[in-house]
Every structure is written in structure tokens, then in C-alpha cells.
Length: 342
Image (cartoon, rainbow, N blue to C red; front, side, top):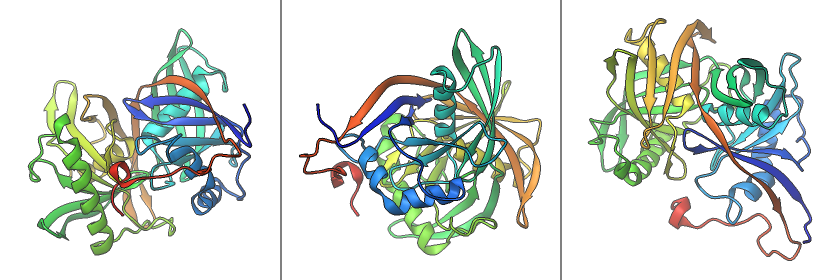
């Protein structure tokens, strides 16, 4: 075999959503902070294209690059590469990264509980892992401060008319619609329609509403549309379905940790969720993330919550991605049958 590059990857998924982790073969990108490094990766595009585009990747794949932390309190740092964005934070990806770090022995595991600090592009996240028999069985992530931005905003979407939506930040930016009002029961057979419609709503929100993060002027767009199911109060706490449409047109297989954080911020802003409540979000495949509010804070002048999310992840394999020097598609390719029309 001949190759001009070899990238070492541990593959994993968190409650169904793929979150591979690059553990070798890539030098850290330039930048004084993890955020600056992530901006370089987003602008350059070479690594993103190599691991996300076909034939090595696909619209279903997320890939995380491990890099040395910049903050003295962090044990490790990671840069998230999603199909269209290189975001500040991701719940499912942070759970995958934590699991890979502990299950593969990159960071030492201590049973029954291991505590580590990760540095995401958007800031530090504290992780508590419940561990048994050499396996990190459940990951608890203290996510970035999350806030509701606009409640009951009016959004014009071509072909749909005027929608009433909420917008929020949960480590990433969301426009949130009522799934039932849109005619969805959040069943698996609705995934195709949710994905396509969600992209239209996200694009309309970016054009008509715009997003503003008080402390990160670089992040000024909506990444996702959350189709939010009705909240039910059960003996175990609050429970709701969730389906997140991801650019360029897929549905998150997990319940989406940043969406759970954003929804908790909205529910708290409305007085519908308190610190003693726990919210379980259920994905289209029936997987779950659990969330609770640890406290309140401010992001700039906005009232915000301190969310904790939890879920499980599993390693699915290891890979060495190579590039033959004669390959005519060194950065891969995309077609609109799966990547969506641009």
C-alpha cells in the first residue's frame, strides 16, 4: 500500500449518531485558542473534505479531531467537524470523544466514576463518566451555558406561510418548531420529510431572523431546526420526542445534546422546567439523552442555564484513512442525491 497521508480514527456512535475521533496522523492546526484552531479548519477545508466527503465519509458522519488543550484545566481538547459546520460544541460528539478517550486508554479510567475536563471550541465542558469493567457506560456532560433567544417569533417560510418558532442556543444555534403543529408524530418513517423541511426552515430563519450570540460574534447563523415533541410529565420526569434536521439534509439519529440543552433553556424561560426537573429527549430511533438544569447564569446580558446532558456511546471500530497519490479525488466528492441540492 502507498499513501501520502495516513489518518488514524477510532469510530464511535452516541445513541445512534456517528462521532468518529481522529487520534493520530494530523498535526494541530494553527491558532492561539481551540476556537481559532476550529476557525482555521473551517476555512481551510482540506481535513474536513478528506474525512467527511465520500468515499471516506458521508452525510451521516461527524468527525472529531483530538488536539492538545490550551486551557490549563483541560485534560484533552477536540474540534468538531459536522457535514456543513465546524461548531462550538456538540453533545453527541462530546459523548463519543469522552468514550473513546476512556475506553481506548488515551486517558486513564477510574471505576466507578472518572471525571475529566474537555476543551471544546466554545469553552470548557466537565465530564463525569460512570465506568464498569473497563467500559465508560454513561457520560454526563456539563454543557456550555445555554439560553433562549427569541420566544414565539414569527417566521415566513415559502410554501408554509407564517410559523411560530422559538430560537435558542445550547452549545449550537437552533430554530425550534412544534412537531405536532407541523403534522409530525416523530415516527421513523417521517425522517425524510423532517430532514428536507428542517433545512428549509433553517434557511428561512437565517434569512428572516438571524442569530446573535452575545459573547461569540463569529457564530451568527442557525445550524439546526429542532422538531420538538410535546412534553409529558411521567413518574421518571419530563419526556419529549425530538428530531433535529442537520444541513444539508439529514436527521440526527441521537436526540441531539445541544438541542436538549436549548430546549431546556426555552422551557426554563417559560417557567415550564425547574432545577429539580429532568427532561428525557427521545430520538426517531428510540434512543434517549437525559438532561437537567444545574443552575442559572448569564451569557452577556441574557439569562441562561447551566445544562447537564447524559447519554451512552460505543466504539464501532478503528480505521486508517489513506490517500493514494494517483487518486483523482484527493478531497473526495459530494452528490446531491444524499448531500442535498445547493
